[in-house]
Structures are given as structure tokens and as C-alpha cells.
Amino acid sequence: MFSPQTIKKDFPIFTYHPARNATHSVAGGPDLVYLDSAATTLKPRVVIEAEKEYLEHYSANIARGLYPLAEKATEKFEMVREKVSTFIGAESAKEIIFTSGTTDSLNLAARLLASRLEAGDTIITTAMEHHSNFLPWKELAKKNGLHFRVIPLTEKGTIDIEILKNTIDERTKIVAFSAVSNVLGTINPVKEITTLIKNINPSTIVVIDAAQAVSHMPIDVSEWNADFVAFSGHKMFGPTGVGILYGKSSLLNTLSPVTFGGGMVIDACADETVYKEAPYRFEAGTPNIGGIIALGTAIDYMKSIGMENIQKYEHTLTVYALNRLRETFGENIHIIGPTYPEKQSGIIAFTLSTIHPHDIAATLGEHDICVRAGEHCASPLHKSLGLHATTRISFSIYNSKKDIDKCIAILEEIQTMFSK
Ligand code: PMP
Image (spheres, rainbow, N blue to C red):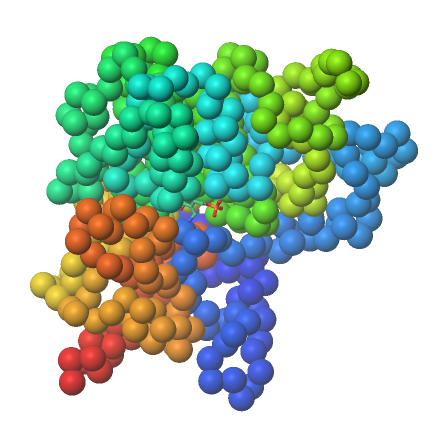
């Protein structure tokens, strides 16, 4: 197991020294307690350096130039496709489409699938989805006269499998659900759910939102047997503006592009266009080259620590935090996740007494403790729980039990302050 103290040294944000007279840091520093990795992870120095190196030393466009700089950029860029493919257990690098993030990936999946749908078909999603895995499907359904079904959750914050089973039929074309909920922290058994769906209707396309899974546990998209899998680079120690849409080759090769422009055609004239094969036909225009190259470095970084180690370590933090929160606040805290740690990743959302989550987050912020408050882009989930907002803490490899203790100590002060 690694030590968070050593890991912290890899992240320049913790070594930044804020101005002496600053009351709290607005630019990181050694006292920073960052408990918002579900929003975005911090970036290790190697990732920052990789992007900088591209920008400073070989910032040519890819797949066009025949001079050495452009060839180097293209080679580095395509190596990342290979890296991503191996990292997530895809069968081929041709299954990896670069996008600008999970939101872009899921919207792309929805647009790619639109031509396969007919009025009266059904799209299914769940009540735990982030808006990115809810709204594109809802809009697609609305525009095409489809049924849009939202599977409710059990009291334990898991997908109600019985209801899902009874909802799928021969008109079910797409089922979209997340691998890990960004609010409840629920780890869904993706392989089992996909098998269940395909046993009932083998032609159903299964779309997985893996935004909260990829940097926290080993994943294997081939074992999942999902058709599409979406995730973001910035939640896996990489830069913002970079995402992935994995698509099974057998599916991608049957789909037509929906965005048109440079880099995706073999030949074009007024009468006829010959598109490149997948994934290139889905990548019109110049991508975020430096960001994608740096994402490759982020993957190397995670691999050097080991995904099993990351998962185990974050699990110990989750168990510790759940226990300490319950011990400290008893009945005053309402944790909305499954709360049995084997089903819960390092995301814990809660309400504390009647204190507004915004007050909690703002006060913690004054103590250099970063958490998120609100609906976390999961309005349907909060509505289903009758809540307007929750406070969310989320972990990554640079967190320690000390961070949790510090957060809980300030939460106790907040409780006292707001009960006066
Ligand atoms: N899905 C989930 C589960 C998420 O947590 C997020 C980000 N909070 C998204 C989708 C959207 O990711 P992005 O903003 O990077 O597109």
C-alpha cells in the first residue's frame, strides 16, 4: 500500500505556498484538504509536464503534416488510444473515440444511435444518473416519439433490478446507467446488469457512464459486455476538455458519423463522400491534442500505483469516514448512499441536522476544506429522495484519514454554530 504523504508530493497544488497574510488559501498549499475529486481530480506534476512538453516542443496538428514534428504529435496521440484501450480492457484501439468529456461522449452516443430508433421504442435510464446520462436520452426520446423510462432505486440506493427486469421488452432499444453514482457512491454490478438486459433482449444497446469509476477501480469493458462506455480525462488525473467514448467495434462499424469536417474523410466531392473507418470517422476537426497526450501520462501514473491498490486504499478511507461520521453525529447525520462499504465507492453525500449544505460547504471552504454542496447535477435523484441539496465528500489517492478527521472536526464546529 502507498502512503498519501508520498503521493501528495506528486501534486504541485499541495506544495504551493499561499501568501503569508492569506486567511485561507485560494491557490492550494500544504494545508489544503481536497475532498471534491468526484467533481475533478487534482493533477500530478507528470501530467502537467506532459501537456506543457507538447505545447512547448512539438505542438503540431495530428494526422495531417508530413514533417517530423507533426509525425511525433500524431504518434504520441495515437499511442494514447492504445493506452486507453488496454487500460479499460477494450479489444482494439479502434474502439476508442476521443471526445471532450463524458457529457460529450454520451451526447455523441445518443446522436449516433438516433437513426436506429423508431417511434414507440423505449429508452431506459435510472434515477441515480447524472444529468449527462439522463438528459441526452430524454431529449432523444422526446424528439423521436419514444418512451422514456426511469428505473427507481431501492431504499439502499441501488438500482431496483426487479423493476428493471420487468421494464425491458422487445421495444427496449437502449439502457443507460452509471457504473458508480456520483452522489450515492453506489457501485453498480455492471456485468450482471448488462447480462440481465441482454438475456431479456439481446439487441438492446447498453450504455455505461463510467465517469466515477475509471480512476477508482480496475475496469474491463469487454467483461462488462457494454456497447458504449463514456468517461472524462479530468476525473482520472488528466486535463479537462478530454473524454472517451468506447464503442464495441461490431457496433461502431455499423454507425454513420454525425459530426462532419476535416480529418474524418478519405475522399469528398459534391456527389459522394467516403468516410474513414471507426473511430476516425467520429472525430471531425482538431482535438485537444496536448490534453489527450497528457491523459496518456495520467494513465501511466495510475498504473504505476496500481488500480487495485487505489481501490483498496480508497475503500479504507470510505469505511473510516462512514464510521467516524456515524459515531460523531449519530442521528443528526443522514447519509444517502448504500453505506455498506463493499457497495460504496469513495463518495459520501449527506445532510447534517437542518443545516443547509451550502452553509456547510462555504464554512468548510473557509478552513481550506473543499467539498461540494447542491444537487451534484443529479436533480432526479434528489427529487426522488425529497431533498433539495446534500453535502458531498469524495476521495482520491492524495487523501488521508487526517483529512477526514479535519473535516469532521470542522463539521462539529458548524453543528454547534448553527444550533445556537
Ligand atoms: N457522469 C457522472 C457520473 C459524473 O460524475 C459527471 C461529472 N460530475 C459526468 C457524467 C459529466 O462529466 P463531464 O462534466 O466531465 O462531462
